[in-house]
Image (cartoon, rainbow, N blue to C red):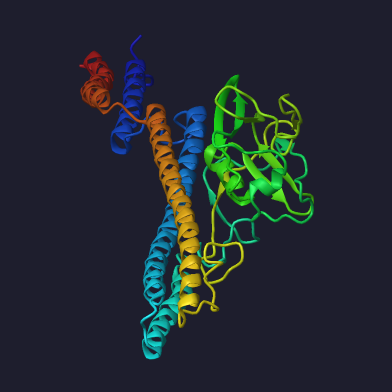
Length: 418
């Protein structure tokens, strides 16, 4: 039937042209944005996943910035420590020179004046070694204190759920008196710590067990051991010490065991000071369940100021006097002790700087991997979209011509009345 009221062919042509225009608009949007999923309207499920991953990438960037600040604080501390080490070397030279017996009173007085002038610079350097408000060498951020320096190492929450797995050792031999600056030899009492001894941590997660050996020596302080546990297990186990109860405690988000070993294969009895059990049996855990743990590590802080008890320069005090040969000899011995302790602390700062660098590298790779996965989800294949764009443009032109032809169909009715 021929009708001037209804042009069915034009309606079909218009529907086809409108569909082509919608597809063309979608392709042009993907070409313009480079995304196949630019909004929730494109694919709600994929868009929700993508937004979550974008949030995580941003969070990882913030964590990396925090590690950068921590690394800078450690670098400043290392510079200060090295400068203080140089001063100690000069003090050593003065102390050795002052031990000569042929010096006059005036010469000794001049040496002592130089000695004092050098010594006073140490505290100035330690107090000036601040980066973004953090000072790791003047006791402000002393490890174990209320303001110890904490660094985020993950974007995941460290709280929530239970506290993870905990293990408490047996109280030390000087219970209630021994501070974290005491030596391990005094802590374990009659137990002899030999050169090859190590505390072994076996950490299990997802059915996979990783083993970490932390070397122990009787001359190490308890605090040095606590720091070594965190460093030696890559932060998977942390240790703390209660100087009231005299107990070393361990904590981890993963199941773990602790044993003292005399060599690589032979377990050694420690009377439970490290692993909570006596004899040669393995440690037991007070398991609080999984899901806890921490998302940060503590960077070791020290106090390199003069005469600070328990710290590297504890022996370098205002009482050192090189105006006599005997005093110079005593000063020389005290400075030797300080140099040894300072170098040990600097080595620890250096290892922490390296650990932070490793952590940042890992986070960078993790962020890159997540970003690549995000691209797989939302990025458009522009080569394919280009071919699709040209095809739809041709289809649009053909559709417009078809609609024009269909619109002319009713005009044939005029020929019926001629």
